[in-house]
Length: 102
Image (cartoon, rainbow, N blue to C red; front, side, top):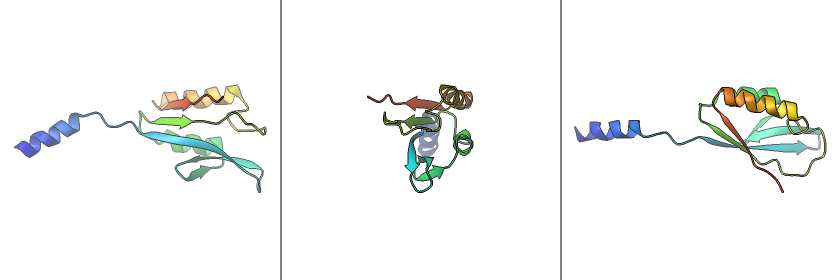
């Protein structure tokens, strides 16, 4: 009986929030940017959105893009594109935390 009570108590505890750290990497050989999360690379915003859209509700995506730009960075070069990306995540109850640089 004690075991069943313990399992029930664990089931009632809130799950730990899943946190993903996202980076934007410049690949000089291909002159392209890729997003990475935990060692997995995404060559487009569409592929990144697909991956993140499959994450559980409550997931937090932390992104610290820094302040150095070379031009043409996906999501960072267009306020509209970044807002649409954020809205896409919010609709799935996924929070984007954009760490301010400076």
